[in-house]
Image (cartoon, rainbow over all chains, first blue to last red; front, side):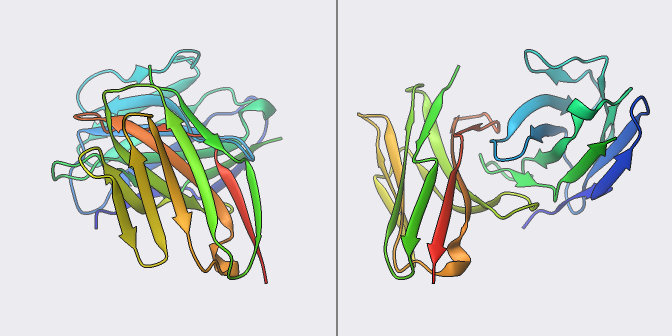
Length: 116
Length: 112
């Protein structure tokens, strides 16, 4: 099946710094990728849809200036958490639909962000 | 937009018992209903899915049923094992959309 990777798998940073998370589709091209945030013991909440060659679409309540998304190529999307604060600590997961016509999504392994 | 409700939030069973998790959805246009299993710190894994043209689907110990009229679908796990312990999420999405709306999750605990 389609494989999606994320890097890093975990990161610890100081408050006020920026953190970049990469999401890659390894064996297929993805014109669209999705970024989710999951707080402990909660569900996955869609943050934004990353579109190759155009601006990302953000969900209501998600600050686009704080969570910068860049879909640089057909296999790479990045999420940058700018000026991170402890409340941004969460599990960030990306996903991409497979190349064939399907509703199924393939999730990356996730990135655990801890902001001190 | 779509709203998916999931119950129960926690389910504790003895090994060998059956477990049932129920979800309801609000958007009658939804036609794809996946179930995911997520272990702590890991990505969600698709375990079974069902489309609106099917009422039931089974894969070994796991089955899913769908009632489109009532807008609810359920996950059934038989002969539960300790390794089934995880958080299970239901989801719903519409045709042409790859974006599922997730339920809140059910923490399943299987006691040996």
